[in-house]
Length: 267
Length: 234
Image (tube, rainbow over all chains, first blue to last red; front, side, top):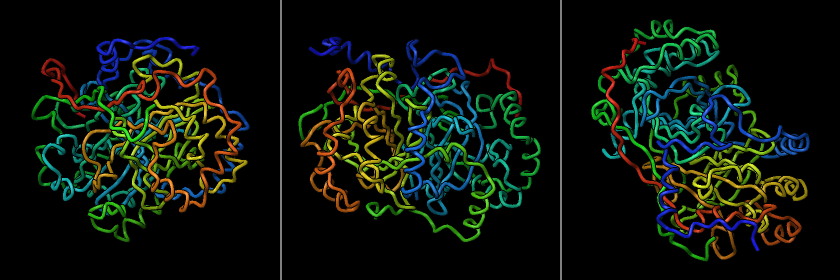
């Protein structure tokens, strides 16, 4: 007899339960979601055996896609369904071509950092080719770059500068899979669509967050902004990007029941 | 479309940009990325469509002994597309998840014991040391790029993914393709992994979508008015 006898016999109840996994719904209080920011993931410290096995694997395995991660940037993002919730991010960036970047996004730049999502960055040319419905999920980068919010830690200006102007013309799509800022100790619920800082009202990053980031990195966003004053702005930001600005609406993601197309028995 | 060969639309990277990246890769710090120690190959299918199956290359790091976080690519090559993420937790951690969360996670017992999930390049004996632990874990996977339907760019909303739970699910051609590419035999490994066991309490009935299909849907939400909130210009 299986140790667990809790089955959801009522399909309606099951559906309601699943909707609590929506990206914009606060999870119930549980060990996995204490609601307190800054708590580590539950679990025991890495054992020596694990460390040894990992080290061994790293020596013999080829990690080519990881070796393509060559840039680190620190910036800010806002939850698309609640712009008051703002986070600092560490982006680890891999370039696939001159028009496309793929970023692994973490909540800090330390080795204990949690993987909180993925952001894709594309040139204006690629963005313009997207269907309108798709464009709504993307955000512009011009303000973020020119305001000095996007920073490349430790990288001399000389190296960073040429690419920044291109970056200012790009659009991003960022899905957050771990809402650490609301105290989730584990990744819960559906991914949340994130938006970028913008120069108006709700899109502005709280000054104390920026100061905290600046102090930690020993940089000044204000200085970066001044240095970037001369940088060309994109002539035009596509109106379908940054959807909330014109429509005062954001997007949330729900998990819903669906008929599974199968090829064999499941589970 | 050329999506099958992983061609992303766009111009080739100019030399000046590559040079800048070589510099940044040497100068900057990549601490969280340095934690990535393991390459693991397995298959995912869409949580509402088992017939759509993807060869998934996981590059994993331990957050601690019980929690791993992985970047999921569509191949092990330098030009691989970053298509998703997977989180892996031990059984005790899984059991603490709220009940509405548990169905989003899948079990790993079958994938590991069948030999289908493996560590490319690592000898059998060494990989089994870790995989006996993985067999007891649960994973949560989202993909953001539907490369299997030929999307040149990551379009649409995320997809919840599931993992193989029994024989007969994995497409024969995908299976043979991977065995050939990596010089492995799932059947042989299955034999050697027969000693392994899954979660101590058995696979939880709520895992793997609680046996049902799941999918994600997008919903528009009204944002609160901000007129009343004074903001300082940043």
